[in-house]
Length: 626
Image 1: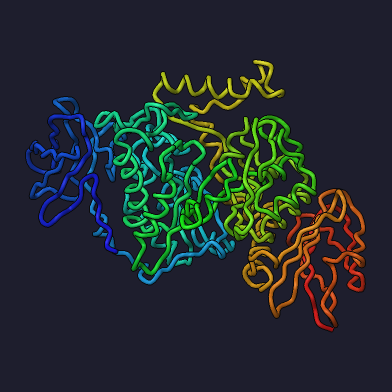
Image 2: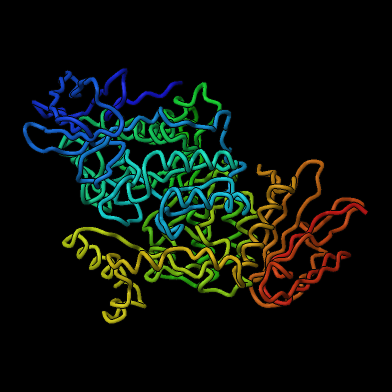
């Protein structure tokens, strides 16, 4: 279907149409400020449904405008496509249909083939722009990922932010570039065979510059709160138009910027008690909007509740989402490998038995009582295909919400990190890498903001107060060492150093990720993602086995040892049985030359098979016909 906006300002014929929802207002005026010539005011006509609308000739792309609401203002458009002078300044008319797209025939990447790479545009490159990130896309293609997931782009106050303080939800952050710069990024990604997903925040508005409530008080819930303040009104009076606002936002990213999907932030904080949950309506709207399109668009949620029905179609009582982040995999791995035990890590043992259970099911909690959570958590996801669970060892939250932004590989033995990487990239779930993870980046990723002085002071104090409940920061002096989010140096320290990719120990880590992802694409057994074609078992407290199979293709056996050196005799283990007339050959070891800075490759006796590990690591064995 041909996408047409219904909110904001868009080109129509030889002029521009304006439409905004302000049900309580008596008078609303568009203040037009053309780049040339005198400014004018256009009174908009109010319809019974509370929408003000009007059309003016001779005003077009690039022209700034604002609104006066009952004589107050002027204010930026709540559905502005561009805020070149910041979120408090005038909006700018954008014509998305003028862009010369070259991605005709692009069909997107299905969940089964998705390998995600999460990045923050502002710290991904020294320049921190869409244009600079575009120049690095070929490196991501060569790495072997198939999808780029951009942290939130909605414009925010100041010049630096993670993006979760977004307030101009339709406007790409001007500090990264123009809307067309984003389109060039997406167009280039598609030419390279990469999907682009955008992280969107529908559970709250940022604390500074959210002008939606100037136009209508009904954007905020009268009953529900969120961890970040007032909840969004998805189920109260006038909620139909609020829901429509967020659905239009989702469709605008997909159709005006050609993105291939959305990652929905913290959907557990979206409170909706209406008969049809907002997420179900959103998923259906995205799917319906793609009818007749050659490409698909995915909707993936971050949700701590482990609700299996989120991933089932509405016809089966579900919400129709395409995927969900599985925090449980990260938490089990982090607890087991790094020993984290504060906060929600209390609910995880990190044993290999629990890690194996998480890989088998997609998440660990399927209704058991979780002590930190304080209630039974999760439902049984039986029947949900493995690729619909997104697994990760790092992401922006799990790195950046640490006091100093340390990455997992900063805190555990490199050989153990390589073993964990093999499990992540060879399991049947959809893997996600966080920018720089592939080369074991030396840089942290810290929490940073650029709020005005008063709000910034509250954020800095709150950040340190948040860590006071952790044993390591019980002493006020220790909390003072936590980087200040408002300090420019905190942002600068989080920028990737691309030059280190070419020197050790980073270069070997990059080659390891490339090798594992190449196997994921080339080996038929690793492209078979359905239940019944993979098995995972604990050999003992130090070693995990993962077997991947496919019809009429050699099986793979991944032997992952997380602790110490040792010999694994697999002759009696059922997962190590090769087919009749077959034996096992060593396909790769994470500790072999080129993949480990100081190699210590494992030795294979294929007659067993028997694998001798000289230290922690993983080997990939492949069936070979004698």
